[in-house]
Length: 282
Image (cartoon, rainbow, N blue to C red; front, side):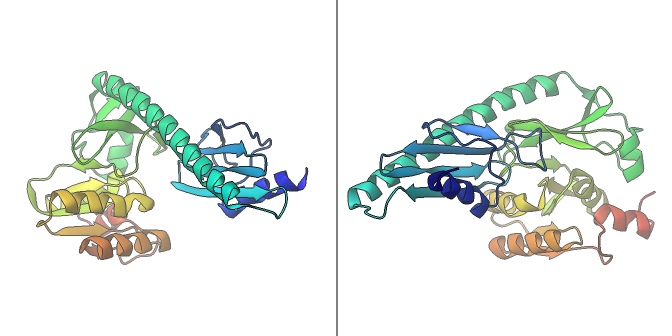
């Protein structure tokens, strides 16, 4: 591997990504999987050869991270080279964004078809019984719970499936950033946000208020921001899982939106664990 490709290889590592086995410099979008998610080709890159060097962008749609890359064949870089590199980076990002949007749109159409061919979830579904929860409007297909993933305007973008054993899966290529799933309560004087569906549903059950599931800690601030923008005068409470990642994400979301936050007293537990242990459910 020559020095140029060593630099490109290092660029992936600097962005927190494992590099692909083969790096192509052809101005096209290339996708590949990370070792921890071998079935998810969420990592991507676009590299152009400018003559003076290689320029482009690396990123990962799963994490939302991306980084510009420039590596040069020699040290005599002109302003023209720099301007060309900047234009190529913008072109690479536009190429990636167009491909991502097309994939999300296709997944949204697939999600609608799946949702329209489901039945109301059985209240005796194994996962619901274990969590001591009612279905709260969930649907079911082939024995799996179907959770809608919508934006703040209730447009369906994707779905999450939960198997009876609790295994969760998202539709490949679906949009989740800024998206949520609502668990409707009898009251909306306070809105709650939690990570997973069972946690949010437990909050809605306990408080009788509407709650939103953000699906992961990294999406908490995005969801809280979207809800705050649409409901500027409604109190919001972030309900975190009691772990380092969950509490950090909840504090960040609360700080950005003026929300309160809470987490259960026992480390490693979520709100559903707390409710069952407290005897409120079960």
